[in-house]
Each structure stands twice: as structure tokens, then as C-alpha cells.
Length: 523
Image 1 (cartoon, one colour):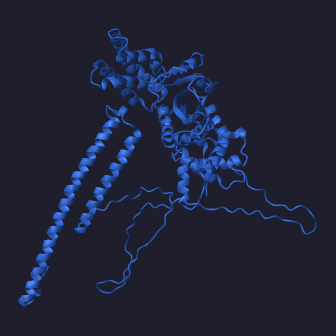
Image 2 (cartoon, one colour; image 1 turned 120 degrees about the vertical axis):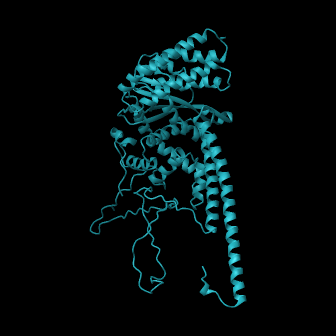
Image 3 (cartoon, rainbow, N blue to C red; image 1 turned 90 degrees about the vertical axis):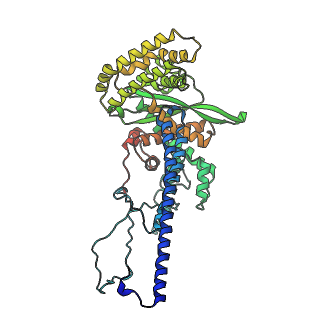
């Protein structure tokens, strides 16, 4: 701000100062107007995008949740999130140009402590006081942490094995034995094989796409080479999958489900439909001591003999969907079936969504009350869950049974509502089994969540190359998904496990290699 003593006496100089002040004022007014316009436009765009997000969330969590594909939802939310970030970036740029930067956002303490820290210090060019010329000294500092990445890169491990001979005699030369390898006489380390398996079966990257990614780094690896490594690793890992399934069959309660696995059928020039069967244990909802796990088996068909073969030796409760093939297993006497309320609900939902069936809507309301009880007892012990269910869920189930019986007699046998009611009544004994056993869940969603990664892999890979490829799929996916259930890094576990197998780990101690027993390698 100019004081009166600073003003010149020359009229021309005064006019120049006034003109400069006016120009500065005009620029400031323009900047404020631009900032206001940018803010208004950004607010409108943010409101629009938030409305879209809310709509997607209603599809996902609201009454129409069963109609929305999970993958489509995630892709849509990713794009909307990017659009919101673009709007915020524009607003921040406009504020910076106007000389009023937005409040600084901090993320202190949120970056994992185990990550390597690379420190850099930004110093002044001159550490001399601009006021008095004295030396400046440090009185504090600002510290900002940003997450950085070193792109994955290849390296070559060179192993030298010197040969030694004796100068005093003609004894044969000696040298250290060659290290054992998963791919005998091949170029990959166990870490690289683990990386390929994780990318294919955990991150859903087909081998040909991986080959394209590696080529960008100047490393040419044919898809057939990667396939060879995958098959060899599956051979080494299959005993672990079999041991895993054997461990699951010792449990008193399992989940079971199946999904299609398209398999190339060269003789007919098209694909055939195989099946991936999933058997899972997840006792976390009632505090069970056994670690969660899932094992997959591939079969070329969906015959009832398949689960009988897979679950030989299992005795207990098997929680399943409505597939009738499990009935043959139950008729053998060792297994009782607990059915899934989510599959019952789905049939009534399809009718209620049309808005023409008050009965279907009433059934959905009553099933929702059962799920409310389940939400209240989640995490409680099996005994406490059973007690609460007897008190609160039993009257709800009895009332629902009376409603279904009464309405079925009033309907045409060919109506969709009658079909939905019969679907529930035929399976009623298995549906109400949860009232007698606090370990049983209301639905089969635990194993369906384990099936979902296979479906995503199927979308990306389209089909398996053969029945053997389907079996490889089942073997490796079993171990990777079990790692994920136990919050273990699958690539790190695979690297360590493949190395130990190559070094001759005893087949009598496969339990030590299970993902829940994994201990990260130090160093």
C-alpha cells in the first residue's frame, strides 16, 4: 500500500501509478470471477457424479442388488472416481492461479511402516537472513511422505559352480551340487514362476497378456514357455491341494458350490462345459478355531458322482445351493444338507421386482427379518447364536412356513409363485437346520465369494485349453484363494513354497506348507 509520502509530485508519474493500480484491480476481479465460475461448474459436476454414485450404490445395496453385476459396478465406480478427481484438479488449478491455494491435504502416518524410506532434503540456496545478513539455523522442518513405486523389472541371477581338481593325484574334479529347481534346466527362478502364477490366477492376466507385458521390458517369453512353467508348477503343487482338501474333510461343516469352466474341445472345434467344484471352510463368523480355506476340483461334467468322489471321508453338515446332485451324497447317511436362504429369496425377489405379487413381497420382508437376527449374532459363539436363533428366528420361520402353506393351496401349480414356494418347501428341512446348529450360516455366500474369482478369471481367459488345464486351474486357484482368505501374500507364499518343494521338502510334512502356517522369509 502506497503512503502519501511515497507519492511523486510529477502528474504523469501519478497518472501511471493510478493506471497500474486500476489494471491490477481489473486482473484481480477477473481472477475472482474465473474462480467463482470454476467453483460453480465444479460443484455442479461433483453433484452430478455423486448422484450417479448414489444410484449405483442403490443398485448394489438396495432392493435391486441381485440384478447388478459386481464387476460392472466396480468399473463404473472407477471411472466416476477418476472423473471426480479431474474436477477437483481443475478447481485446485484455478485456485492456485488466483493466488488462493486450497487447504493442504495431509496423509500423515497412513503409509505402511515396513516400506523403504528414501529421504531427500530440500535446502535453501543461501542460508543468510534477508533482513540483517546473519546466518540462518534450523528451527524445525516440514515432512511430507508420498507413495512411490519402482516398476517391476527383470534381473539375471548368475550361479557359478567352480570345479576343483587335485594336483597331487588323478581324482575326479569336484564341485558344489547344482541347486534344485522347479523347472529343471530351465531359466526361471521360483520367484518368477510364482509371479506368473499369481498374475494368471490371482490378478486374472492370461499368459499371452503377460508375455506382451514382459516384451515391453525387452524380455521375450513365448506364451507356450509360460504355459510350460505353469504346468510344471501345478504338478509340484497338486499334493498340497490334495492335502488341503483332506484337511477340509476333517471339518464338521463345509460349504459347497460349483461353477462352469469352458474347456476347449479341439475335436469339435468349439468349447465344452466343464465344472469347477468348490469346497470351503469359513468358521470366522462364530469364532471357530480352524483357519478359512477353499479347495477346488475340476470335473468334465456335473454328475452327482462328482461331489461323492470329492468328499469321500467327510461326515458332517454340507451347506449348499439348490442343486439336486448333492442329494445323492446326503442319502449315503454321513452328510446332512443345509440349504441356502439367499437362493430362496432370489426366486421371490424376481416376482416382487415386477410389482405384481404382494405375497412375494411379504416373503421377502419375513426373510429380511431372519437376516436382521443374523446380523445381530455375527461373531458370537455357536452356542450363543443357537440360543438367540431359537428365541427370535424360530417364530419367524414358523410364521413363514404357515404363509407358504396357505398361499400354495390358492395358486395354480404352473404359476411362478407356486414354483418359488415349492422350491422352498421341498428344501425346508435343510433351510431350518440353522436353528439347531449355531455353526450353520443362513446362506451359501461364503463359498460363492470364493467362486467369484474363478468367474472373473473365466471372463478374461475365455476357456481352459484342455481338461488338464482345468485341473491346473483348480490346483493353483485352491492355494491362491486360501492364501487370500488367510491374508497371506500369494506370490510370497508361492515363492517360498516352490523353493522348499524343489529342495526336497518331505511329503509327510505338507501341513507345514499350508498358507495359514506361512512365515515370511526374513531378509
